[in-house]
Length: 173
Image 1 (cartoon, one colour):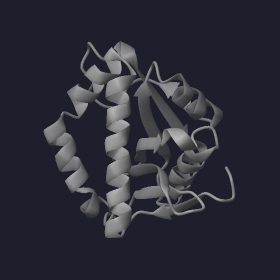
Image 2 (cartoon, rainbow, N blue to C red; image 1 turned 90 degrees about the vertical axis):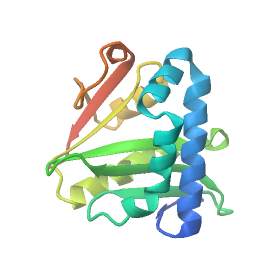
Image 3 (cartoon, one colour; image 1 turned 30 degrees about the vertical axis):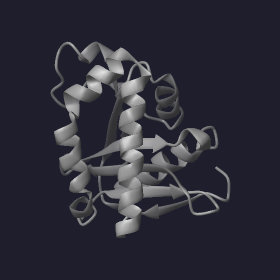
Image 4 (cartoon, rainbow, N blue to C red; image 1 turned 90 degrees about the horizontal axis):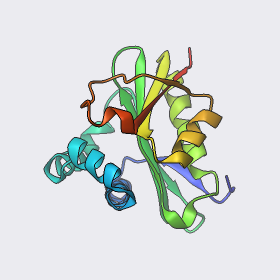
Protein backbone atom coordinates (compact mmCIF):
# COMPACT_ATOMS: atom_id res chain seq x y z
CA UNK A 1 0.00 0.00 0.00
CA UNK A 2 1.17 3.51 -0.69
CA UNK A 3 2.50 5.52 2.23
CA UNK A 4 -0.07 8.14 1.29
CA UNK A 5 -2.97 5.95 2.46
CA UNK A 6 -3.93 5.97 6.13
CA UNK A 7 -6.36 3.84 8.13
CA UNK A 8 -8.38 5.47 10.86
CA UNK A 9 -10.96 3.97 13.21
CA UNK A 10 -14.24 5.58 12.13
CA UNK A 11 -15.71 7.22 15.23
CA UNK A 12 -16.52 10.85 14.42
CA UNK A 13 -19.72 11.88 12.66
CA UNK A 14 -17.73 12.82 9.55
CA UNK A 15 -15.85 9.48 9.51
CA UNK A 16 -19.06 7.51 10.06
CA UNK A 17 -20.74 9.42 7.24
CA UNK A 18 -17.88 8.47 4.92
CA UNK A 19 -18.16 4.80 5.96
CA UNK A 20 -21.91 4.93 5.28
CA UNK A 21 -21.29 6.45 1.85
CA UNK A 22 -18.73 3.76 1.02
CA UNK A 23 -21.07 1.03 2.28
CA UNK A 24 -23.85 2.32 0.01
CA UNK A 25 -21.34 2.43 -2.85
CA UNK A 26 -20.45 -1.19 -2.04
CA UNK A 27 -24.10 -2.21 -2.09
CA UNK A 28 -24.57 -0.44 -5.45
CA UNK A 29 -21.45 -2.17 -6.80
CA UNK A 30 -22.83 -5.58 -5.80
CA UNK A 31 -26.24 -4.83 -7.31
CA UNK A 32 -24.62 -3.91 -10.61
CA UNK A 33 -21.94 -6.60 -10.66
CA UNK A 34 -24.07 -9.60 -11.61
CA UNK A 35 -27.58 -10.97 -11.30
CA UNK A 36 -26.50 -13.39 -8.58
CA UNK A 37 -24.75 -10.67 -6.56
CA UNK A 38 -27.89 -8.55 -6.85
CA UNK A 39 -29.95 -11.49 -5.58
CA UNK A 40 -27.54 -12.17 -2.70
CA UNK A 41 -27.54 -8.48 -1.74
CA UNK A 42 -31.32 -8.15 -1.87
CA UNK A 43 -31.74 -11.35 0.15
CA UNK A 44 -29.40 -10.40 2.98
CA UNK A 45 -29.63 -6.61 2.82
CA UNK A 46 -32.87 -5.28 1.37
CA UNK A 47 -32.99 -1.49 1.53
CA UNK A 48 -34.91 -1.19 4.84
CA UNK A 49 -32.54 -3.60 6.59
CA UNK A 50 -29.48 -1.86 5.11
CA UNK A 51 -30.82 1.55 6.13
CA UNK A 52 -31.20 0.28 9.70
CA UNK A 53 -27.72 -1.20 9.62
CA UNK A 54 -26.23 2.07 8.38
CA UNK A 55 -28.17 4.06 10.98
CA UNK A 56 -26.73 1.81 13.69
CA UNK A 57 -23.09 2.27 12.75
CA UNK A 58 -22.57 4.89 15.44
CA UNK A 59 -23.60 2.38 18.11
CA UNK A 60 -21.50 -0.35 16.52
CA UNK A 61 -18.24 1.50 17.09
CA UNK A 62 -18.93 1.67 20.82
CA UNK A 63 -18.77 -2.12 21.21
CA UNK A 64 -15.86 -3.48 23.23
CA UNK A 65 -14.65 -5.64 20.34
CA UNK A 66 -14.51 -5.01 16.64
CA UNK A 67 -13.75 -1.89 14.67
CA UNK A 68 -14.76 0.15 11.64
CA UNK A 69 -11.83 1.37 9.61
CA UNK A 70 -11.77 4.17 7.09
CA UNK A 71 -9.01 4.30 4.47
CA UNK A 72 -8.07 7.77 3.20
CA UNK A 73 -5.66 8.94 0.54
CA UNK A 74 -3.05 11.67 0.99
CA UNK A 75 -5.66 14.38 0.36
CA UNK A 76 -7.96 12.96 3.04
CA UNK A 77 -10.46 11.49 0.58
CA UNK A 78 -12.20 8.37 1.86
CA UNK A 79 -11.28 5.53 -0.51
CA UNK A 80 -12.14 2.39 1.42
CA UNK A 81 -13.60 0.83 4.52
CA UNK A 82 -13.89 -2.42 6.40
CA UNK A 83 -15.30 -3.55 9.71
CA UNK A 84 -15.33 -6.44 12.12
CA UNK A 85 -17.54 -7.61 14.95
CA UNK A 86 -17.84 -10.54 17.34
CA UNK A 87 -19.90 -13.53 16.27
CA UNK A 88 -19.13 -15.28 19.54
CA UNK A 89 -16.43 -15.24 22.21
CA UNK A 90 -13.91 -16.95 19.90
CA UNK A 91 -14.90 -15.63 16.47
CA UNK A 92 -14.62 -12.23 14.82
CA UNK A 93 -16.29 -11.64 11.45
CA UNK A 94 -14.95 -9.24 8.83
CA UNK A 95 -17.64 -7.38 6.88
CA UNK A 96 -17.98 -4.77 4.14
CA UNK A 97 -14.40 -4.49 2.95
CA UNK A 98 -14.75 -2.12 0.03
CA UNK A 99 -12.30 0.01 -1.93
CA UNK A 100 -13.48 2.74 -4.29
CA UNK A 101 -12.80 1.88 -7.95
CA UNK A 102 -10.22 4.65 -8.38
CA UNK A 103 -8.14 3.28 -5.49
CA UNK A 104 -8.14 -0.41 -6.40
CA UNK A 105 -4.91 -2.24 -7.12
CA UNK A 106 -2.93 -0.28 -4.54
CA UNK A 107 -3.10 -2.76 -1.65
CA UNK A 108 -5.80 -0.90 0.27
CA UNK A 109 -8.05 -3.97 0.72
CA UNK A 110 -5.10 -6.06 1.88
CA UNK A 111 -4.11 -3.41 4.40
CA UNK A 112 -7.69 -3.10 5.66
CA UNK A 113 -8.03 -6.88 6.10
CA UNK A 114 -4.67 -7.18 7.83
CA UNK A 115 -5.61 -4.41 10.25
CA UNK A 116 -8.97 -6.06 10.96
CA UNK A 117 -7.27 -9.39 11.67
CA UNK A 118 -4.73 -7.64 13.92
CA UNK A 119 -7.57 -6.00 15.84
CA UNK A 120 -9.35 -9.33 16.27
CA UNK A 121 -6.14 -10.84 17.63
CA UNK A 122 -5.74 -7.88 20.03
CA UNK A 123 -9.37 -8.34 21.12
CA UNK A 124 -8.60 -11.95 22.08
CA UNK A 125 -10.39 -13.84 19.32
CA UNK A 126 -9.13 -17.26 18.22
CA UNK A 127 -10.30 -16.98 14.61
CA UNK A 128 -11.60 -14.63 11.98
CA UNK A 129 -14.25 -15.57 9.43
CA UNK A 130 -15.64 -13.86 6.35
CA UNK A 131 -17.57 -14.62 3.22
CA UNK A 132 -17.76 -13.37 -0.33
CA UNK A 133 -19.56 -14.06 -3.55
CA UNK A 134 -18.01 -16.86 -5.57
CA UNK A 135 -17.79 -14.57 -8.61
CA UNK A 136 -15.82 -11.85 -6.78
CA UNK A 137 -12.64 -13.65 -7.74
CA UNK A 138 -10.35 -10.78 -6.73
CA UNK A 139 -11.71 -10.86 -3.18
CA UNK A 140 -11.30 -14.63 -2.96
CA UNK A 141 -7.72 -14.38 -4.24
CA UNK A 142 -6.98 -11.70 -1.63
CA UNK A 143 -8.28 -13.86 1.22
CA UNK A 144 -6.27 -16.82 -0.05
CA UNK A 145 -3.10 -14.64 -0.17
CA UNK A 146 -3.74 -13.40 3.37
CA UNK A 147 -3.69 -16.97 4.69
CA UNK A 148 -7.40 -17.58 5.09
CA UNK A 149 -8.57 -21.12 4.42
CA UNK A 150 -11.80 -22.03 2.73
CA UNK A 151 -14.44 -23.60 4.91
CA UNK A 152 -18.15 -24.27 4.99
CA UNK A 153 -20.74 -21.71 6.02
CA UNK A 154 -20.54 -20.40 9.56
CA UNK A 155 -24.12 -19.08 9.60
CA UNK A 156 -27.43 -20.23 8.16
CA UNK A 157 -27.54 -19.51 4.44
CA UNK A 158 -30.54 -20.03 2.14
CA UNK A 159 -29.94 -23.22 0.15
CA UNK A 160 -30.44 -21.49 -3.21
CA UNK A 161 -27.64 -18.99 -2.46
CA UNK A 162 -25.15 -21.39 -0.88
CA UNK A 163 -23.53 -22.48 -4.19
CA UNK A 164 -22.78 -18.83 -4.99
CA UNK A 165 -20.88 -18.01 -1.80
CA UNK A 166 -17.40 -18.75 -0.46
CA UNK A 167 -16.54 -18.88 3.24
CA UNK A 168 -13.12 -18.32 4.79
CA UNK A 169 -11.47 -18.71 8.18
CA UNK A 170 -8.13 -17.73 9.66
CA UNK A 171 -6.88 -19.05 12.99
CA UNK A 172 -5.16 -16.23 14.87
CA UNK A 173 -4.66 -17.52 18.41
